[in-house]
Amino acid sequence: MLKNSEFVNKLRNSGLRPTKQRLKICEVLFNRDKTFHFTINDLAKSISEKFNEKISLATIYNTVHAFKDKGYLKEITISSDKSYFDTNITKHHHFYDEDTNLLIDCNDNEIGKVNIKNNITGKKISSVEVLVRVASDTQNQN
Amino acid sequence: MLKNSEFVNKLRNSGLRPTKQRLKICEVLFNRDKTFHFTINDLAKSISEKFNEKISLATIYNTVHAFKDKGYLKEITISSDKSYFDTNITKHHHFYDEDTNLLIDCNDNEIGKVNIKNNITGKKISSVEVLVRVASDTQNQN
DNA sequence: CATTTAGTTTAGAACTATTATAAATTAATA
DNA sequence: TATTAATTTATAATAGTTCTAAACTAAATG
Ligand SMILES: [Mn+2]
Ligand SMILES: [Mn+2]
Ligand SMILES: [Zn+2]
Ligand SMILES: [Zn+2]
Image 1 (cartoon, rainbow over the protein chains, first blue to last red):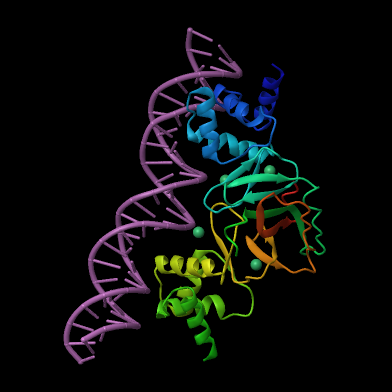
Image 2: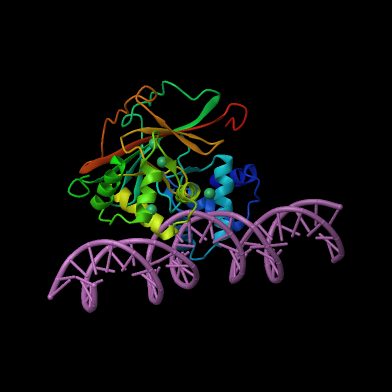
């Protein structure tokens, strides 16, 4: 299987050995068509559903953070009470549906380039992120 | 003092009685020239420094949340491990200095209008926020 | 006033996401 | 095989936040 060596590479590049637990994490994270926006709990649940076997939370946290540090995952901050991660590591923006708590990727058709006219002296821009919060038409009219 | 009745109004509008603890919180939050970006801990520290007297964290949390719900404060999400609040309740964007952990307001001179071309069907946009993370030129060159 | 009622403050407990720890297990190396 | 290094795991610790319930204060009532 071609995919497997990809996972091994990602793990090795992140400074981690390709163990069976970590390969299962990779399966859930990277063996999919669409972007996966997830919390650690979402991921833990997906793993245990797919493999009928739990992996320790510590291992999941460690692996996700190693991937994030290496740039194989992005962290998205939408709320202060949970961390969200994203398998789409390209520069992109998000809609956040406050009704369903789901993140949706924006492409350039949906949000134009953000025009930053002045940056702070002596500083380099490390990221530019737009978050568009949306909610059902009939509620939250504030 | 003119300011005091303003505080009383804000409290009453938020469904809170104007007690001495809450008026102190108002002093620190609203009796200032520049925008205040703060965590609950920042606020608690400011209060105890200004008045040489601690106010219970529960009171601070409650009051800040009431003001937020009423729209007298905004919550800014930059990190998943702490909540940040903002006394500038107008629509605006932020620079976040990763070296100093400070938020800086952007005005329209600095970031142009964000062009949202397509919204999600049946949903209403409740906010649009841009966060520009910046860091010192000589480090974090990723 | 005096009494009653309702709202508030507070310390500390509870909760939850996250991180740290350290022993048991597994993998790599010699 | 023996030795060493890395990993997994359960569980403890931590930190921000929310909850609770008792003591306190303010407002309303008669
Ligand atoms: Mn993190
Ligand atoms: Mn909150
Ligand atoms: Zn995304
Ligand atoms: Zn601001």
